[in-house]
Length: 332
Ligand code: IMP
Ligand code: MG
Image (cartoon, rainbow, N blue to C red):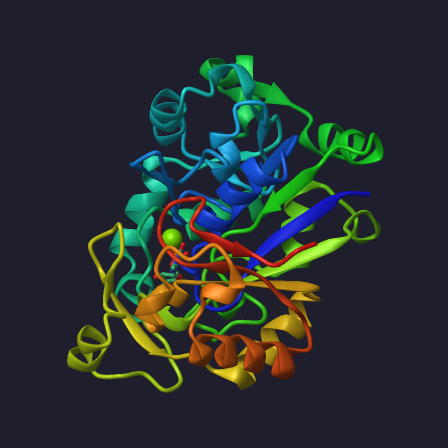
């Protein structure tokens, strides 16, 4: 029953795109299902090229992998076609016929709502309003759009068949638990639940079909938009530590040191069985490009040990650079 859910630990931008692209090649994934919507970008670096994916699953770098967009995702038609072209995946990508369409009017609703724009700090893609429309039972669906006809499929059936046939399936979560509509720092959250259970629901996979929940941590915490960030550092300090990041949207990410109490909470609610830690090379320079655990400096190993001790789950993947293959893989 080889089905893994990849979920974000904190406020998104943990490097899930990198981890998923690594697994796509290393584990020879057969199927990858993207959940969530266009507000979340997954970055994949491969063969010197950078891809920022808002729609296409991050496993695309494995040319044999079937790529699916789950029923719980909102499809942004223009972005979908743009990415399908850049990644050249036209012949192996499918969209659930009952996924909702996100329209220009939804983005305008986000951008003109002062609470969402000024307080919550929405990305402005219109994901919340598109979900509202779905809840009102007036949403446009993928099956209503003529250009999408060649891509339509029953994602739940495809994925469940793949799992039952012993194929390797990955469910790609977006954002992170602290942005969950239910479990996050409400009201500074996104318009959907982001937990591992919600990822399964959006893909149409029941909880008994999943055997692995891989939670992705970054070696420090970041957040864009409003809301609390425990231990937040002043911008000058984040620059000094090289933790300062600018999101694809051009917004500055706030940053704080890794928080073990929050780590325990997110592991619990996600039911995580394994962890990945990305950007360890930013915390400890000597880790850059390492591909074996033995190469890591002592203090980096201690940090990893502490995460394992406090959360009770093994850290199996460690990111040591931006490229998909810059990883220490501790799995057997
Ligand atoms: P919205 O979901 O676009 O309305 O944004 C709501 C909140 O979630 C804002 O604070 C955003 O910055 C944050 N957010 C949404 N998507 C992402 C993401 O992919 N990464 C990080 N933050 C996100
Ligand atoms: Mg991102």
